[in-house]
Every structure is written in C-alpha cells, then in structure tokens.
Image (cartoon, rainbow, N blue to C red):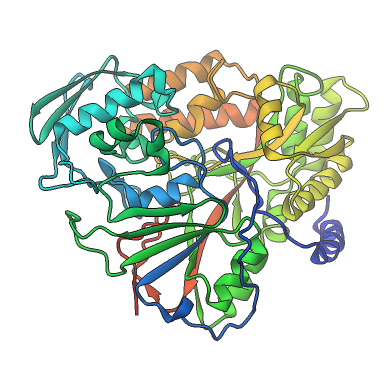
Length: 530
C-alpha cells in the first residue's frame, strides 16, 4: 500500500480515537496476571500543574503504579507490577546497570568454574534483614531451598531448577552447584530469584509472609491497604548508603488518565508508566521531567500454528509482510516505540542486525496465493483498550489489502491467558516484559512444548539453538546462535514481531537521582528531592 493511502487511513483512525477515553495501559505480558484496572477511591483529579510535592512533605516519595501489586513475596510473585515494589524492599544477589552489565549487590564478587557448573559467590558483610536477622551464606542456602520446595509452588522453581546443591563455605562465601551448564544463571540472580528474604520471618509468618514482607532493602514494610496504598519507611540499619527520603508510598492507578492527572496535580511524585498519547503533553510541562529509555521487552501477535489458517506457513508469512510496523509505531504509539524483527530489543547484545523489512503488499499477496488457501479469515484477541483497538483497526486494514479478513475479539486479560494456555484461539495480541539475558525472551516461547509456547511452534533447529545457547559461556558465540534463531523465527512467523516499546518514566521536576535502567524498574534508593 502506498504511504499516501496509509496517511488517509491513519488520519481517520486517529481522529476517531481522540474522543475515546483511555481506561488502561496498552500492552499486556504473560507476567501481568493482575490487570484489574482498579482505582483508589480517594484519587484527586484536579489538574493544576502548579502543585509541588504532595502535602509539601519532602520526606515522602509518592509513586503511582499502573496496578496494585497482588503479591509482596518475590518467591511467589507472577505479576510484573510486583517487581516495582520489590526494588525497595529486597536486595538481589546481583543487579544490572544502565548498559545491562551485571553489578554487585548482596554478592560482591562471583567466580564460575571451568566446567560452568559451580558458581562461588562472595557475600556482602554486615547486612541485616529488616527484622534484625543477619544475611549470610546460610540465608542464601535457605532462600534457594525455599524456591526449590515443591510445596511452595514457586514460579521461581523453573528459574533455579538446575541448582542441585547450595554449599556454605563460610559465613560470607556460598557455592551454588548446577546439574548442567546454564549460561543465563547470573541473569536469573538479577531478578526475583536473586531477591533474598528473611529466613526468620518466613519461618515465623508462614503464608502470611506475603502480607508482611521482610527483606534487606533500603526500605522496610509498614502497611498495606489493598487497592489504595503500600507504605514503606527507610531502614535505618541499611548496609549501604541510607536513602535521602524517609518514606515511600506506593499507590495503584489502573486508569492511565487518572495516574497522569495525579502526577500533574502534584499528588504523585513519580509514575512508572506513561500513556503514549501523553508523551508530548508531559514533555511540554515545565514542572515535569520525562525520561526515555529503551526497554528489553517485545510486543506482537501469537499465531496458533496448530489450526487453520495459521497452520499454513505461507499465510503466516503473508501476515508478516502485510504489516506496516512503522505506521503503527508512529500513529498508535506517537513514536514511543520502534519497529521490531525479533524478541531481542535494541539494548540486548543478541539484537540481530538484519534490516527491518518494510510492508510489502505485493509479496504478501503472492505468499497468500502460494498458500493455496482461499477466503482466509481469523479472529484476533485483544485487550479492550483504546491503543489496542486502534492498532487492531490498522492491522485489519493492512491485512484486508492483501486479502485476509481479520475479526477483532475484545477479551479480558485473564481470560485471554486461559485461552492461550488451552490453545483455544487463532491469534492473540500479547507481548513480554523482557529479561536481561536473551534466553529469557525466547526459550519458554519457542522451545517445543515449553510453558509459554502458546503458538504450538516446533522447530528441531530452533530447539537445538536454544539448548546450545544455554550451555555456551562465550557471549559472541551465543549472539551468533540467537541471530540465526531470529532469522528462522522471522521466516517461520509463529509470532508476528511488531515493536519494542520505549520506557517512559515521568516525575515532578524536583525529583532527582532516578536511575533509568532498561528493565523498567523503579529503584528508590538513589532518589532525592531537590
């Protein structure tokens, strides 16, 4: 389709959606299992951009999240939004910096044996959990044994299931033994599997630990009121540099308009997500700082390869070449996203260097003719949000140009996940929040019969590359494997890679010290008011 036609179409769509009120964030990931879009009853919806810190309280940082974290135990968590609160409550064994390099946290150093089976960690001394329990090698052993305990049914179990032994060498040295080489292991320790909880609190509280979390982070838990707030206060015995701000209050705002209104009015100091339609407005507000960063997630469409019409490779390829990714990123996301060809975002060392193909209507038509199928039609599941609807309408028009009819089914997020798990779908618009190591973005999605392989895709060559990339420590060699895999996945098209979102964090202009890291997490430790 010529760009002139697109511009006419795009203009019509855009004008139509100006009048639609936004009610939730645009992109789900299989991790975002709590998508209630609920809003606290006490929201302030005034729109004064003159406001300063809420209640003029420079000792309290108020954070607006896109949802209420359903789980405050990192070893039980399965929702992406949980991780935002965890950054304040818990320390990890290892963290990452702005360039996705591994940096010490509770582990000050680590060594990997020549056979890549034994990881020896040197631990930070003088660390206390919030209940006064000492952090040491025994605590590390306790945490791994807890995650591996089948009775806990921890989502972390699948991340650490190659750990066969945890041996205490001395108080501040621990040896973790794997049953087979696993190159992404250090990356696992930068997220929830690396977050250390207090053994004493777990033993005393049992299941109630999820409601009274005890970590060793810069802030300790005070109180939670569901769908209203989570209150934290500075941990005065913190082993590192004491945070400048005494208290943190985390409030859920499922409605993106209300979230931004509370930021602009001054009731909130910082928000973790910004609607793409609000980017320009916030950029122009002198009282707001808007920060932009590449993120490590990816977004697209799952195609069910087990059933018609997407059991036909040429139909999937026709879909792939019919989509004008640039138009979608410009119109729907106001250039707050970049077109994608793979699961590996720009910050990733596995990001392939093959050129982003442009939409090719004639090629898509030829592929559809080669498929031997006539009157190709399918239903796409989307979440009922304005951005999803707008994107679906654009895709509908693009596919229509090549002779594919697409119906749109708006569906609640949890129901969509259930349908994906059961294989009861034709296509679904869904993405993934991303992981530091590229393995975390592909293995469970494209390995035959893997847990998140919703498409039913199976390729012996991709399976081989996935397995081999896990056992090789050389990054360049692994990157070569992932590049080859990306090209195969582009050609087989079980998933239509569409775009990588940019991550936007918005805060009042007096909020300083925020470190914008591509994992999109809000780390409160370094933040201060000017």
